[in-house]
Structures are given as C-alpha cells and as structure tokens.
Image (cartoon, one colour):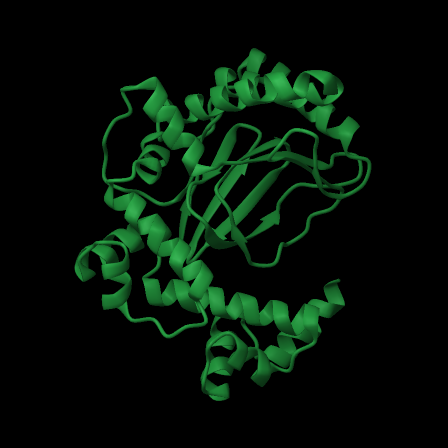
Length: 309
C-alpha cells in the first residue's frame, strides 16, 4: 500500500486566518452532523462531530477542502490524506472510500466540496487561451496538493456569499471560475487540464471511465471499449491504470461489488440476487470477490455494517 500525501508547509498566518474564517462560516451554516447542499450551485458543506468511515462511493469530479480536521481516502490499494493545509481534487469519477481522522463534539470536522464540471474547465481553457499549464505524463485522477492563500481566499469568498443570498446569482459564477482558474494554474493543474482537453489521451480515458460507470453490469470486452474511446488496447490499459490505479476489469469489479453492497443494504436484496443484478453469473465467484474486497462474505459483512448504523 502506498501512502501519498502532500508535505506540510510552515504555518502561514494569512492562511490560518482564512482557514479559521472558513471553519466559522461552515460551523454557522451546519447545525448537525451531515452533508448539506447550499444556495450556491455545486457547493456542499459537511460537519461531523465524531470520526466516521464512509461506505465506498462513486466520487464525482470535485475540489475538497478541510477547514478543520483531516481525512483519509482510499483509491484501490492507495491511501491519500488531506487536512487543513492540503486539499484534494477528484478529476475523474472513481470509486473511493474514506474515513475521518479527527472529529469530536468540541472540535468537529468541517469541510467543503465544490463539484467540478469538466465542460466548465474546457470552456475556461478555450476562453483564457494558453495559460502556461505544463504538459506532463498523466497521473492519478485523484490528487492532494498544498493549499495556498490565493485559492483559499477565493473559496472563502464563495462560502461568504451564503450570508448575502441576493449576491449569489451574479457573483458565485465569477468566483467559481476563479477557483477553477487557480486549480489549473496550481502545481498539479495539468491533471485537470488533461482531463478537459478533448483530444488528449487522458480525456479519452475519462470517457472510458464514464462508459464503465454507466455499463458496469454488462460483460466487458476491452477491444470494444478501446474502440469506443479511440485508443489502442495497450494504450487504454496503460493510461487507464495511470489515472485510476486499476485496470478496466478491476475498476468494473469495484463498481459491481459496491453497487451489490448498496442493493443488499438499502433494498434488502439477497446476496445471489444482488450478484446477478450487477452482472455476476456465478454466486460463488460473487461471494469470493466480495470477501476479497470487503474482508468478509456478504451476510457477515452486512451484519457488521448494520451494527455500525
């Protein structure tokens, strides 16, 4: 298992002042534990008074910032950690799970999530012209980077708009564009750039990811998927693993097992029925792969989950 996290920078007084203001804003607009949508489009606030572990979920492209506390996110066999000094960006929809590392009633976890539309990135690139975004080999579609005062200032101004609702319609789109611009100009901005530019191999991988997200229950033929996104089979394998840390087949398996777990937990399906629903023809293969991913066969895993709910 690799642990990938950004190094802590020396504490910047201005950054700490901005972080404290952001924490105060989130705290005022969240009364109880949970994730809350806001009047600002695509902006979500979260607050948790105790450490929790989230179920595996299909994360959408987003910027995630912790104003207070820290969080660990798992992608495949890799672990990423971010906190009040480091932000996380998901640039491609991917199955991840996470757990809060610091949260208690007197020091709750406080965070924001700003969903990112790759089409918005593409429009910004087209309008702004060359921005000096370096071209580098494709990396993961999830990364952690060091927070700076320019990015955090824009985020604070976006959240401040919740206090002046009449300004949201006019100012929120402008601040959103500034945030996306700051992300593109950041040290790892090439990752967002590559996803958005339509003729890049990384963009084609993101199309393959989208296809799998919508068709994971169907048999996977790599030749067909490669043709669908206009890549050779070998390039698709190489680039797909570079972006998601998994092969297309491993990725499909994660999606299938994640959905089967949801069906059993939320809709009461039996294990065999859930396995068939997500594309497994063999109940024994489904149970075996489920146990490998979640550490226990379906019935035992569900019993354990229900005890924690």
